[in-house]
Image 1 (cartoon, rainbow, N blue to C red):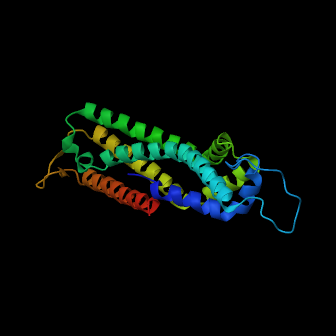
Image 2 (image 1 turned 45 degrees about the horizontal axis):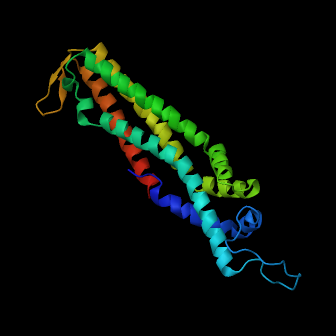
Length: 237
């Protein structure tokens, strides 16, 4: 899944059109036109400082620099998002909600380890989003974009992040991890209390309380998982 793939290019174009006048002024020393300038003409009424071709070259160079800086920061976020989505999809498989698919308590430990890895990854992703502002600022400076212009570009890019979706997905992912942890604890504490149901992939319990608890846990996990899927869809729209 390519998160932000289509948004990245739009962000760069949006930023350029939004702040081109200030950008060109700020970059006049950092991005020189390819043509060797001649003697500076005497001031006259309203003559443009650069011709159209020079302006196009400057905008193109600036666009490339912004794209590289944005890709560097978004690339790290993208990688973590993809890794988390993959681990999440494994935990969403129907087998994880069927205790009969666990051959022994060792399998429970294995999936606890996977759940912890997902939690660690989610913590790392939250930090990447929290650090997006300074990371973008540093990446733009590294591309030789001066400070005042870099700040404007950084602010425009940050405003384009789907922050409400990012926050909601993070909250739901933490709920999903906690709920799945509760399910694994249930398997561990009640090992052997279930049997295969009449429908493949289902389990039944003789104890009504255990049956109700199991159904409640499954319901919560499925509901939270569906909400997370909806947030992933919202991120790429």
